Length: 512
Image (cartoon, rainbow, N blue to C red; front, top):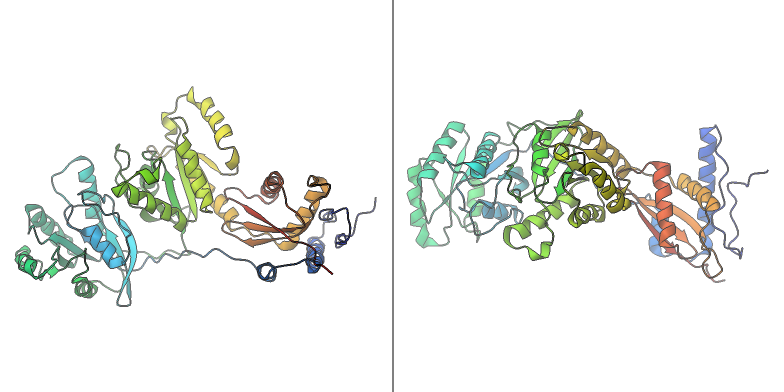
């Protein structure tokens, strides 16, 4: 039987309203296949001239589409750490320096628990600003781990802003912190915070007794004196970090998300190989997103630990409310998200909602079932049934069974991340895409609508990260048919681990 010419299309006047003609079967000659695809693309593109197209349609067809922006992370910027005992205004000062509300602030001590890094700039100089939890001595439990993180921040810093509450004066804790700072050998700038007016400046002068030089009176809340403080900090800060090690190629950003207490921080610590973030049985320990640059599988990665996403964000308040907002921002800044699910417990509606949150943000996705070591054999068949029923719409997401506590199978995380990111970055040529659709709709035509078949005129990939496809059609395509196209796209081109967007633009034939 003779095969149809791959460059032939139905005329617009064909009242049968067929979809795209099937393409010629592939040959062994790759170059010939490429020529056929290009010829088909040109023919289909020419056929659109008989339809009314908007300016945005023409712009899409003429251009190569929109690419996702690459996220660059500099690793050689000098590091300025902000330290002090609890509730002296460290996070407020961090927000003042950044010029926006990044760090979670609440009028209660102990809100910040981990060391959190932010890119900052002052007078044309760029640097990394590190917020820390309250530094206390002779404490136990979570408070001890918070203090240890502050000590690590000083070790990895190039200069330190030591914040003291001027209205309280120096305390025994402040004096012990001073001794620790002296032992570190780092340049220290003394910050006398909460100096809201001239009446408090005399209190700030008493801080000379700490032996760290001139105290800089400021009000982090109102911005008073922060400019002079930053000028002093820039003098103490070297131009190049003595601790940062540049890594080749831009690192990919990975957000660890999930419900509270599913093991996000434990997984980050296991991947990093040290106690990078505070881990505690108390749900909601992490509040600020924590970035950590690591090398895994011979490549640099930035892993971001986030606060647990609670059931109803709008019903939370204070630190939990802002922590939830920071988590959403961390997802949007990431390229791929690892959604952690507690394998030892029944999957919840909130787990499904978090997966959907990642998809809605257009990020690549990996689902990690943590605490696998705590799951008994009776639980296993129930988990498989939950996955089949509740995650039926995201069967395309790679699944990794891990134990963050023991490190079991955490080595499988990077290959899953790489597969998802590769799909997230994939672009299909227009000719190949239309050849695929031609074969697909020939074998499985769209159902009739009002006695007519909507005709697919042309298709193109508008962007990557995530892949977004635009189909020009002569009529509306049913949602079930769109899902069918998506499923076949995944099967044919291997879109594993990335959401796919398919939009249809219905265009009518130009009136003569």
